[in-house]
Length: 243
Image 1 (spheres, helix red, strand yellow):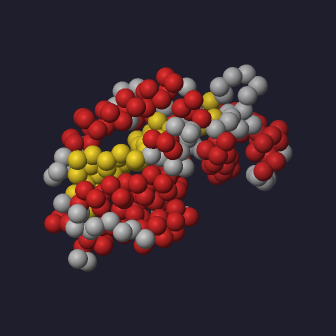
Image 2 (spheres, helix red, strand yellow):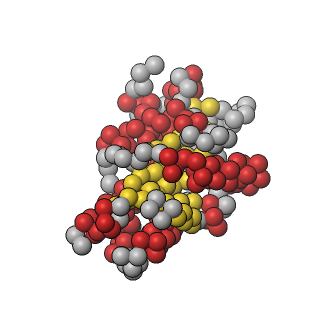
Image 3 (spheres, helix red, strand yellow):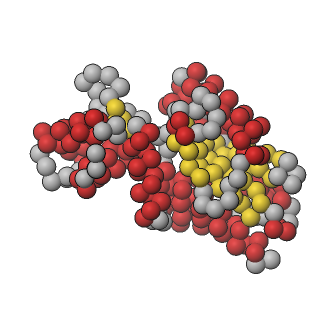
């Protein structure tokens, strides 16, 4: 099924609503907040078509709908294609301007930057310095506030995924080129179908490379998080290149 322009708009607004509330989104709720140019009955039909095409799922009878991995991937691909800079870029630029880390002290600088990204994204952030074989993690206290982690089993799976990334994935993965985004089952670690990861390279002094990754539920703010990691990494890298 080739998605129509109207269906694309419905899907984008549904994802944005679900990201904010963590609750299934109904056609009635969408109709109240947005004008798609169709009556509520037609909006329901369009959502049914999106469900049949694999973009939406209904967790239980009479509930609203939630996005699937396919929907998130479609949403993220469009963000990357459009290359829009949102509020995340402005926030991260202001934050990085106040960055006070010892620029020639790689571990300290990476740790401070990890904390900055964690605060901006409200996610768990992990950074890796291969030359020193050092990892830094920030954001546990923030990520556990997400409603998904009220389920102990989900939190246990998340912790195991982070451990797998730290021990096995990041040290062996090639992060050259654009940032990499893994959604649900795309994640290379086991039991990670409920989570997403955004990872990319970080330029360091003496032409060294580090890796930084943002982890959270699939219901993460992709637009903001992509903007933040892109802008901070670019600003940080440019700072070192001018030294």
